[in-house]
Length: 350
Length: 287
Image (cartoon, chains in turn cyan, orange):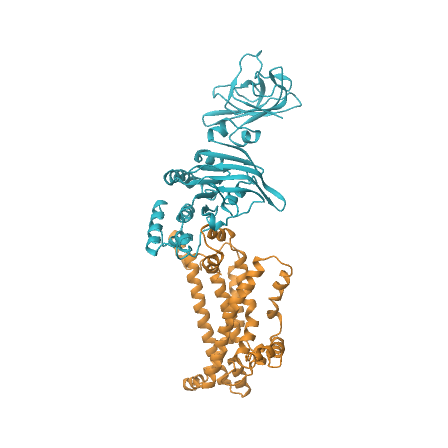
């Protein structure tokens, strides 16, 4: 089931939580909504589910405008951050709930429900726990019960709000891999919200990066990491360093000095901007006459297989710090001078 | 050395917590409860023990005693049931909706706690008597709401309401809205959500409220005697019968009725507590 969000605006007490957001989700895709807290990612998920009503704009399920459908009519599977299991019901009753509340005519017979519950329990690898109550389960088991409960109604779309947020690191990793397999096996259109970029990049077909109620970029993990389209995405995803620069005469200058980087054809030809690069995308420059960024090592530290140097590259009175990776055998003692040039970079106009 | 140290430790009372003062506070609590509750109750039992077994059972088998106990426990039970239904609705309104006057309603719920019961009894009797404001209207439909067991139920509903509201309200405030949303995404309508998700979660609190309202109703005297009519065998409550026996200087009979009331109340509260403990063990929560 394709889902498209068209020009959605959502206000809470006049404050816009989402501002003119549009997004097309293809059938069978696994999509991550990634952003810092307050970016509107959970609001967007709840709007798709029908748990919130948009101030403006519409949501389409396939070709049908679902904007005015109730939560019940939308037929989505929603997994809540804290699972929201019914604690007075057994695992089996929790999973069967969506089937047993159906109108009498559409309700499957009891034996059929029992069979479906057994199938779902097997799918989430919890067979044998049907008689347990939620408080007798671990966090990871509750999460999978919540997922089985959502899947029981055979939803068109599966929506997960911070699905691994409340779990410890090890269980989180396991469940992440398990969810990917689960998705590939069942082929549901799945949208999940996370603030953990590692989770989003590893798990999703496409990542939607959000900030301050707007979508910054939509793309594959490679797209958002290697080709970020805004300063926000560049600094939000992965480690990065940024340098304020001016561009003129086909040369990029930092504090008036050329740094050995020339703007590309589609970069700005002149003016001020910010140069972004990854700490690992730099080359040391040996020739003292060649243009480069020059910095004094403030601190350096060994990080597993690499060495990270914190450089002060500013002129006296205008300090500016960047962190770069240097070869392990490079002399990076505090107080020494290092000259380097970014090899992969992106220039954003002011 | 180590074994003897272990042996001496074994005989000490297990330290329940690192917070100091356990011995002092436990000692005080026990002394206080003994003085306030256990000694008077023991006195009651001891007093009724001055009767011989035969006399005791003769008093209990007396038609008037049995009827009075029936009236007391029966009306208290019905009133507690009524309070459970309407108390939960009142709590729901106070917790779930924002409206002008919500705080006033919240405060009004406590009035039956604060009002002297005799005042409540007189007011209710005046209202529900056949010539009272409400009584006149009910009379048109042929309903007599005062000076009979119906009147007792009305008085006990008035007295018991805050017990249900005040026990259910805090649990209702804690309901996680995600649970309701989860039910909605699974296709449950509002009615199904309330019946299958919300009410079972509130059941322990509702049961506690019921127990408190019921216990209060069984022992209520002040408000009831004005509206009950106090007709022996019909609308005479057990506490009133105790007073009558005392005025006849028949202390044995009075304490015998009191003892049986105590025993019945104890058994009912025990059963309710067992149900609660069972639900807490099972679901990991309770009121």
